[in-house]
Amino acid sequence: MNTETKTTKSPVKITEGAIAELKKLIDQQELTEEFGLRLGVQAGGCSGMSYMLGFDREQDGDVEYEVEGIRVFMNKSHTLYLAGMVVDFKSGLDARGFTFENPNASDTCGCGDSFAV
Image: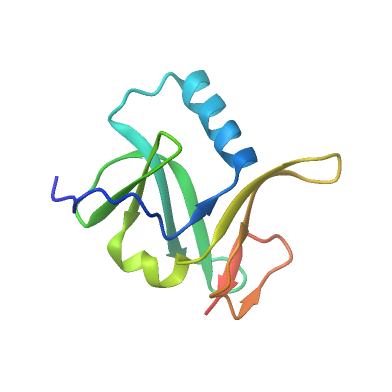
């Protein structure tokens, strides 16, 4: 693929809790080294844009980062929307799952999966 050079400094922070959960998911799904975590945005959601988070293969236009041994793929054009974002994992009784704290969002919806810029 036409991936740009892997950099060591990701524009997105992934917390220790999220890293632990991601590594658990990688093991459970028995993903090979060709897969990495895809972070991105897509049109949709109640605030206009929604977050993408899942395992995927490298694609054209991706920039690859390494965060605590996890390959992270991000389309170069998505950096504008995601720079400075913090991805966390909550496992409490009132909420369970990945959360996104995005300083670029001008508005977010109640579910936390959708935002506006």
